Image (cartoon, rainbow, N blue to C red; front, side, top):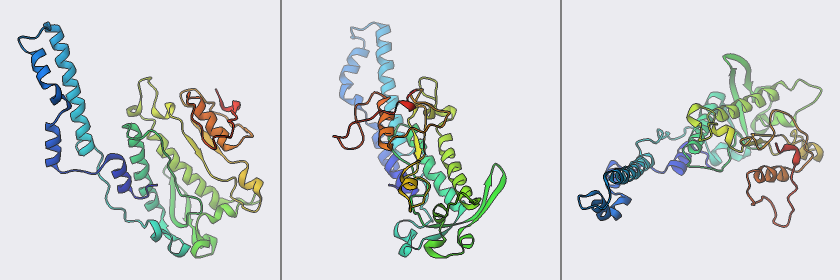
Length: 302
């Protein structure tokens, strides 16, 4: 798991090299190994006719073009701007003594959108085909503060510690999930959940632009297999039915292979949901123990 934008950038796009190294790589080519043959077939003694010579030259020119573009993207020219060093605490500094930290909402959103933007670009440029993205892990100890603006309007003012009337880990935002009560308005919890889903939607929107249209005319979002979920039911740990049942999954249509636009109670284990999604693509690989049979969830298959 990459927590810092600069680490994710290096993982996906590589480390920026010097211009000297770039110039050296641009001068080399895989075509060097067939240089003599190229001279022969394009020269005056070539057995090829003029039309064939043109096709031959165009073919090699395209190889060189893609080669140069690949080198340039890998090194610098077409790569996205390299992010600066994160100013937010990470690792152990982000949870000193298990007591959590204070964080402004704007800082959290800014860093998340940088991370999610890099990940979306990795998918778009085919640098990544499988992965996961997390917006706040289970039990993550952040005391969020700041105005939540949605579509130009102030929707809520976060101030976890003050609203929970607690400090340290007991004043962190994840406590709202444990305090859910059907008989109350749960305003803080709903605001946090709304904000999280807004940020997930922001990431998905990056995969649904004109620039992400693929060969079939559909966007990456329409073609990709994506699931959005949480690891538990409604957050209350005092009842296994609440904790392990009713876990929410949202899935994309995967180019028409899966049902969308409706809510389904599939009454199945998450592992079977995931394996059913994978099987619709034709793969024979499966998740989970090898000796566990795959139980297809027909309700989600289009």
